[in-house]
Image (tube, rainbow, N blue to C red; front, side, top):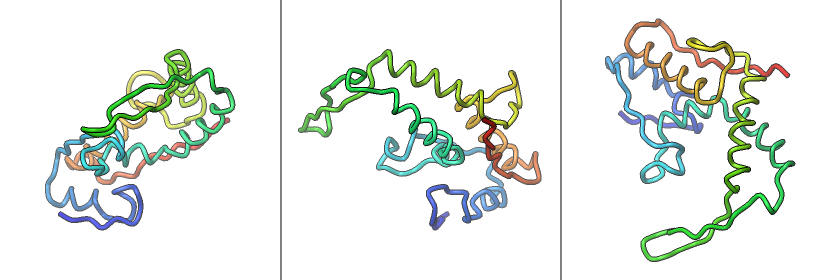
Length: 155
């Protein structure tokens, strides 16, 4: 099956969800973390589920960057290719843990999509996992429709 995309998300104006359902697909294997980390740079479905909430992460990162300064970074040497090494800057371990903790707190505080299972408030991981679960239920004909749950912000 070939899908022509005009947006980064495979579900936006492509009919992909409906086509998979018509073909009787009940399982989708997802690989990769983000498009830039997937094999040969190909985007994966998990990236598409992440895209549904990218605006939340963008808002968070813009504000979080105001708390970061040069001492919060470490320089690491790594392989860029088989014959070349390069240096990259990363957040140090303490600041990285702080970023992840605050990101989850941010999601728990402002995302108004209720959790389907345990707990009341969403974290980034639960939001994406639950969206994938709802999509799988649609593919297995357990649900008549699949409409992505877009998080409205509650400040």
